[in-house]
Image (tube, rainbow, N blue to C red; front, side, top):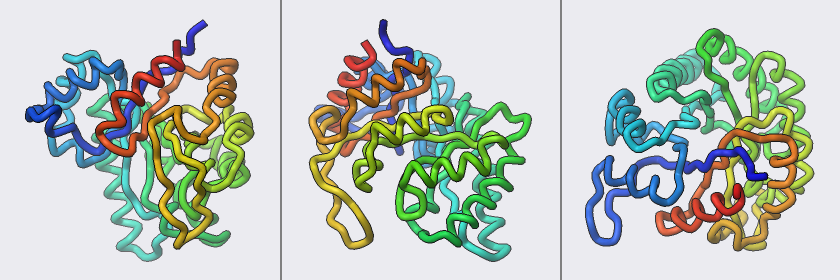
Length: 266
């Protein structure tokens, strides 16, 4: 039996040119649709290509949907100005996600900047305060394992103990677990009850264990060291029906990556 997961792509903006020819928005959407894409994870810069309502109409024409909308916000900075900036970012993010028809809002921009228990508690408190903004919106706020602040399954479970009951959910990124020398298979198993979105990418056998470490080298999905097969088995056996969102290292990696996900699903 095939998995029910959707085939997705993280993207900050449309490809501007392909095989030497310029692409407009419709051309880009037609191209990625031809590669098997079903959903898009959209960052705010993508809206430079078209306003949210127009972008949604264009995606509808091509049989595509928005699975997740990303909001950049610093949730650990102190002071009224910083808190107002984060609140403003979420107001715009919730509005854009609603116009795009995205069921999920993803927040980033904090975890790669901070570290330590005090900041973890600050992050938890600020997320808890934000969750009230999602009541009656039909949207779900998610965070992922990333950066120096929260990159272990243990910390993600702590966050769910604190805020899972208030509606916070998780996006699991197995590539990030690999980078931080975490067991991506065991982490997926532990976090599966809270996981509603999933990032997939691959790396060679290289790890990032702290600031100053060399950049990890990405490779085409399925050809690196991340253990995808047992992770997919967990998702399949638990009926995961969310998105497997490709996080490609370059434009040339998009087509093979999407085809790899399609093969996994089948």
